[in-house]
Every structure is written in C-alpha cells, then in structure tokens.
Amino acid sequence: QVQLVESGGGLVQAGGSLRLSCAASGSIFSINGMAWYRQAPGKQRELVAAMPRYGNTNYADSVKGRFTISRDNAKNTVYLQMNSLKPEDTAVYYCNVAIDTGDDRYANYWGQGTQVTVSS
Image (cartoon, rainbow, N blue to C red; front, side, top):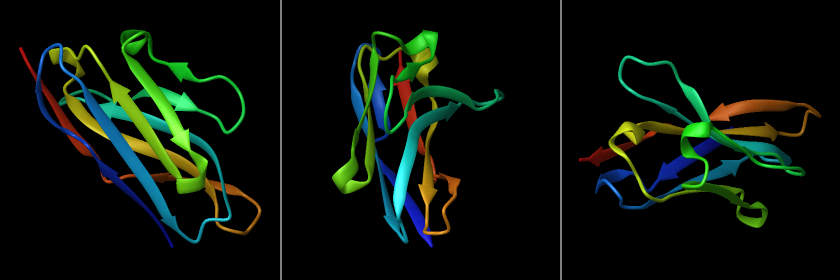
C-alpha cells in the first residue's frame, strides 16, 4: 500500500505565494519521477511541473519563472513553490509519483488533491 498526502493549499491574493508538499509513504522500494498537475473547473488536468530522479525539470509555459518544483528523496517528498500567483492559477493541484513497491516496475500514484484559490 502506498499513500500520497498533500498539504499547503489555500486562499491567497494575486501576487502571493504558496508552497505545496506531497509526502509518499508505505511500501516504497524506490521512487522515479515526481510531478504536479492541476485541474481547474471545466478544464482537463494539465501538467504543471515534473522532476525526474535524474535529469532536467520540466514546466508548463504558464508557470515558468514563477513556480519551482523540488524533491527531498530522503523524505519521499515533492514540493511546489508557487510565487507571483495569478487568478488563473486557481485549481485543484495533484501530485503524481512513480513508485516501485518491490515488484521491479514503476506505477503512478496520485495524491488526493489540494485546492489553491487565488483572488484578484
């Protein structure tokens, strides 16, 4: 069993900052990629930022220069620092983590989602 627990969402004014966290726990042998997605009302879920275990990070054009993804491998945790927030960043944010639970393959797990609301 694997659990992803997200925290850090909330209500913030435009121009403000929030930091999201997503901690993985349970039967974890190793973790590969870690990413954040978001879904606004009436829209499809979209990739916000992705960070492989090795290699370059990837950001959606709409958040480049404002959001930063990072990870703490010792804590099995991924973070999303969001600065200069805009009303269009309002969405439910989900973490997605590729985890090997010991059967020599990676499966994708999702967090429960955390609401981010940016007021104008």
